[in-house]
Length: 426
Ligand code: IMP
Ligand code: MG
Image (cartoon, rainbow, N blue to C red; front, side, top):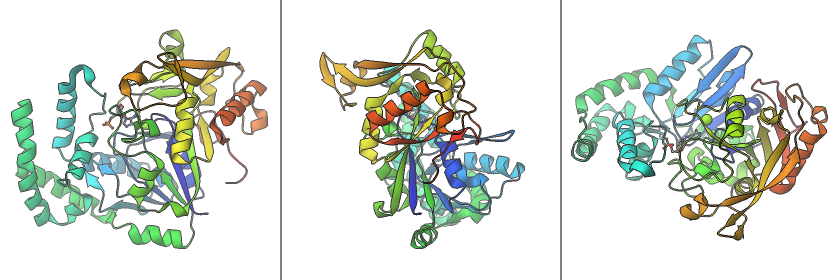
């Protein structure tokens, strides 16, 4: 039992939602602990397709306790619309807990996100414009608003009277934009307070209780290691820590409790937004994989950039997170290809390089070195056991396993819950 850490090993969108949903089946608790509604999950159950930005994937399992943890930044408006959609589908929300320590996205955050991106010009990051970066900046600056503040109206108002002038100054003086008023924000957030009240709690006793009883807890990472503030392709990253340390910190769980760290990887690579992407495919093949893989953002609808599997990035993710189990998703997207490629090394100015380095201008000019394997040219979508995969597909998995130094324990061959090859035990 114990804590299973499930996180993204690439640039996000690896299909963590589906894997967490499967893990949640036998878990008592699922915790989402960093990121905000920049993330997006799609979970398909029968004929229903659920899209989540904030709610942990485990919510579809009626007895699983779902926690939106301390390290999250959430937009109450977005959260409430997700809750409404779930209620309409008859989902049980009694087991949802929102940490009073989680931070809130305030109305000025998305506005500032957009304005700051505009000001960056050619160096823009391609953020999701959800206000996530500005909200985390305010948290670090100690002028953030926490979910628990909703339950303390006088405190909220006092803080807003100090913080809002700082924000308005930036809006008006730097960007010539409209200022916000304390009254309008208070009115809006008073309504959120009323509607979210029943979910807001301190999850500490609940989480520690689950750990003490050795219950199975799944930690659901958002985004991916290459978008991590410290470990990713800075500044082309998100504003949180999607790596193992960040996910644990955001939940308030120590590393001793982790019994398994699952790295979720797509069978190829995608990235949304700008920044280095050594194995990017432009042209027809990239277009083909984007269409076949449905590579358009859950949150923003943006077309994702597509490329071959980058084993240098993946090996780095395995190392920095201590990943001991791999989940490979969307294998079926490669089904029709004659050959498949894996990047096994780079060249930087002629010199060999085996991992993504810090220097962004070097990263942008890496030349990937590929290994080519035969494709399988048959559908894998019906496979439920590894033996049912074509031998070329198995060879691809074996090679990835060898390059990354961890076993491929989960393989996803379609969006449906059942389209998965699962390990016998975990
Ligand atoms: P932000 O998180 O909105 O500030 O965006 C910063 C970068 O992270 C952009 O390149 C986004 O496209 C990317 N990003 C943020 N969240 C996700 C995610 O959940 N999946 C994939 N990319 C993401
Ligand atoms: Mg996503």
